[in-house]
Length: 130
Image (tube, rainbow, N blue to C red; front, side, top):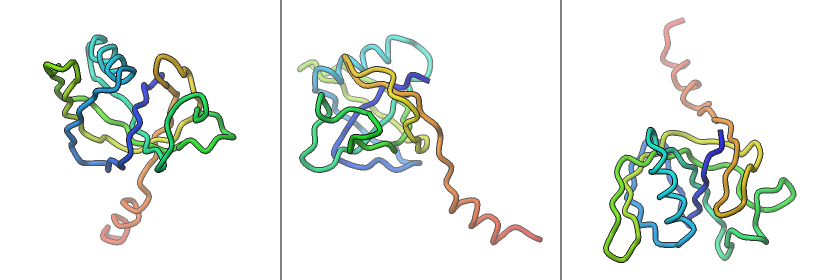
């Protein structure tokens, strides 16, 4: 899937809902395009290390230090604010690993693989009858 990627300086956790204020022009473009598609508005969130910025020096190539694991999010609501930014309520659906980058401009996109949470399987096996 050609998943649009949004970067931030914080970590989103599966199962939580977040309110996002999108004001960076490339991400306003990303969310406008995503919401115009219709249907579920899925996007990926990647946490950047402190001091890093996503750009020509920080792309999604295997040799780079760019994050390769993120979370799949779904925009539930979106409102354009008077200053042109977008307020989005999004929930985190799960984690993913980047399989292959598919675009770098005007915003990053990638094919991703879902990651399972093995500790849930482990804890369920402890309580399941034998």
